Image 1 (cartoon, one colour):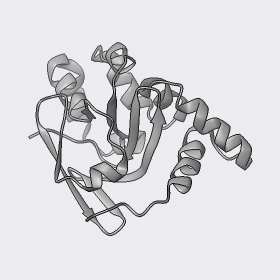
Image 2 (cartoon, helix red, strand yellow):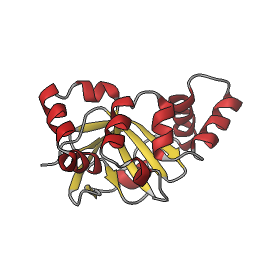
Image 3 (cartoon, helix red, strand yellow):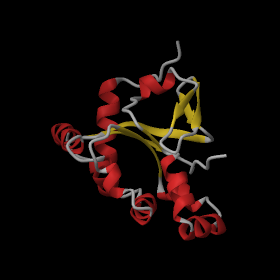
Image 4 (cartoon, helix red, strand yellow):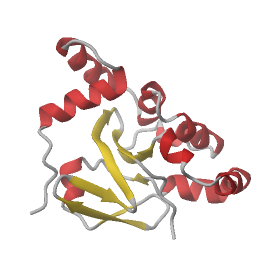
Length: 170
């Protein structure tokens, strides 16, 4: 059975550092607990590496939805991932709210899927109705063409998995 080989304690510390920055071990545990009390949108805002994603979520009118009860699993591309997308593609999406919503919802599953559950799957159904492929090789997990760089960032209404590319539905 395929498994992501990340110890739960290491994930909690990595999540706390990703959200709160470097700090003492006690502060990191507190930051992880605080992050879990914030929604996926609030957690993404606080992380400081998802400005483009958050901006597009707001533009598409999805911020309220993703701040709701959930649960959600968000495959969150970083600002660096959005920087790799050709300007024409982002401009086109910004002008077509329906396409933008479809692309963004392709990054969201309507259930809480921690890394261990994702590693056992060959695909995940997204909120845009399509499935995104999942592949695990050793310690590397890929969702579509993106690599999960940080897994299991906790939020009150789900979980965030940081990815290095923007997923474009086919």
